Image 1 (cartoon, helix red, strand yellow):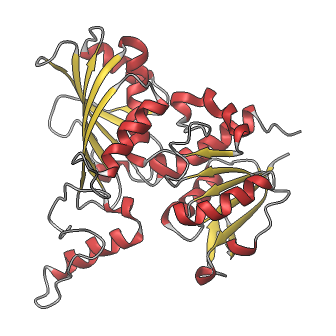
Image 2: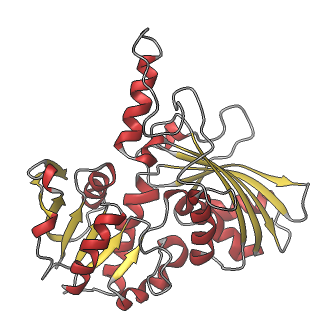
Image 3: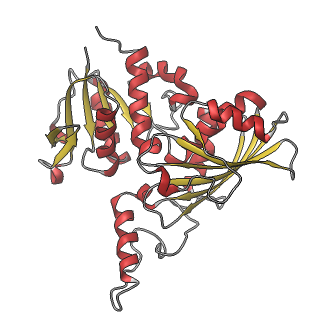
Length: 340
């Protein structure tokens, strides 16, 4: 027997990826429905070889449905997730709304799958920020071996993390560079994104960090270990899909870079591509459409005691959002909602 599955926000980038990944991974679906706002009502979306017409999220009755994958943003989630949960449908939410609620599990299956049992508190499970998800997948096996004290991370985040508007703005600005009089002023981003990098993602906080940077700190502590110190600088770059991260790690115990490679080579969700030669690493373009979190450039950091540096790349629409949500659904089904 399979599950009755809802995908809310099915016409957006992440919602469409959720449908694709559910089909690709052959998630046991008996029935599936695609929901959207009224302005997108009737839009057709693909689920494997099937075509689904979106239904109205506002009037949908979640009674009798098992799992709902939400990709509708915090404001809509605040309205509809409690309705779904009250109807007995477990919500897996991709927004930031519930991530920091101590009663709601924040899950990356390769890292803290055991926390899934907490879903019973409110019938809601939170999906982490895209930049956090790939980083903790890389950190977890190393933390298990040598205990991480501190992480310094600089991110290089693609415009798809800002949704369709971000993708469109990079595309339009890039084209406009070559046509006099067709230049496109920044709208989604604070400054020109084409041929540029922007050291701001989300709003600024009182301490000078941005909310995106704060998310990485808070989520890493909740998912992996509250005692790890994290500092982040999050940067938007002119890449369509795929987030990259330069991660510097300080451990309690010494960890040789070659042993770290061996650990990462066997770690769930990780693919090590690390040859010390030109091109012996992974870039965002090469990770698009893949499930893995890629690790390259593993090396000792001699400037701190017990330090390592590495390069981490992943498809943010997949592991950073849709894939992680589907993996949570798989864990939920295998451990908590078994049928048949």
